[in-house]
Length: 117
Length: 117
Image 1 (cartoon, rainbow over the protein chains, first blue to last red):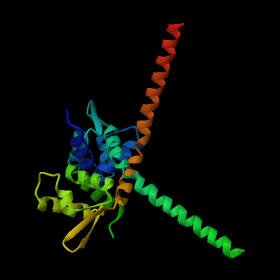
Image 2: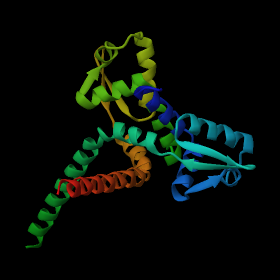
Image 3: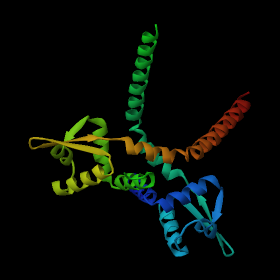
Image 4: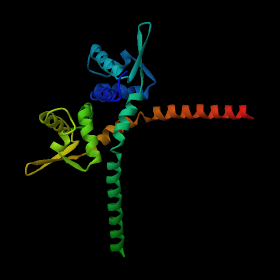
């Protein structure tokens, strides 16, 4: 079993690469896809795509199943939930700056209305 | 200017390391901290901590300001907002499994009440 910090390490490491993020995004839209279908939009060769799939698989972000000669890839989004929960603690900073923006917008509006009188 | 995919690459890469995540978590709790105070809880040497701070700075996740001999580090959480927005699209999978769990819990509860009658 991999512990929580190591799982986070792997999840974030898997998300560093834009090709891997594109694969995950595609699997979010489509239920599942074959390896060759996944590889098609990329300029990189199939073995390079396979390596990216290995990284995603090691991070627990996808599952692969083989029927005959076709390998079907499915999304396994659970590890991303932990990553998002980790990021969520910083949310208060963004809502704080939104609050400040709202207060500023309100004061500006009040100012304008004052001038129009 | 660094574009959106590159910014995401850097943010996720900065978050891969548990020491860097611990530094960010501390800066979330405290308004700001000196480099030496940040380095204190870690078993690694100061130059290693400085390298981690360089990575966080390059990713735009911290700012550093020097007054006299003291370098003060502050959190700059904005890039994590983009990372979280990227992850948010997978949220529907987690709420879907929560919905299934809620439906299961409700049916179990109804079953129990049926038995109690």
